[in-house]
Length: 110
Length: 122
Image (cartoon, rainbow over all chains, first blue to last red; front, side, top):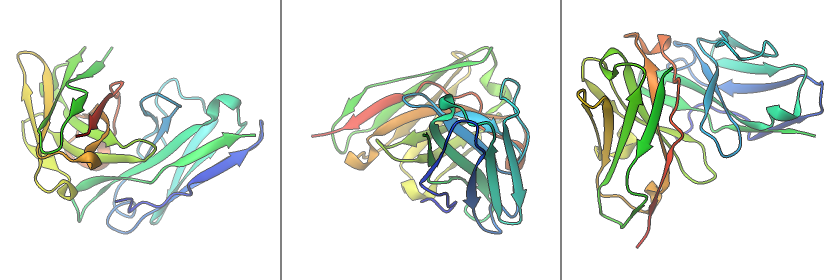
């Protein structure tokens, strides 16, 4: 039930800047903040960006989030090999009254 | 430091009831929202439901009234029951703290437990 749409894959070389998009609708991203989670292989997800663009302590400033209308983006600058992971956007949906996750984007560092 | 640990049977037969417990340390469960989230093998994340600090619950309707979330404040545990499981319920199940604010837009999942794999097979 991925009402939030993400590209299934993304890639970049070390040092590059990569962006991952998350598209929703007026009842979710258009009305609420977006959170981003990083899932390293074999581990539980962890929060990377909350409330659209805020970074928890310990998250490098290479990671940034933005939102415009019914879409959001995660940008990773200065790509590093340890950034190879799955990335998920999430937002509350006011109509369904549930948390929605995007389908996830697998980032490969070439 | 907040820590979460999921526990419960790892193997179930179709039609049985899944029962998992999330033991929380470092904070009182009565002060926050707590969610259960699952991830089928090789798939994305699916929100199951939450319990608020007041004890109210909210569930994903796609699970057709099968989940129940409850708590034991004396043990600082939040539990999940999912009835009538099928092979489609095979997944890693995570518990996560959702935050303390009333409005969902002010909440996010942090931290997460390590997760526990539940396999449904005849």
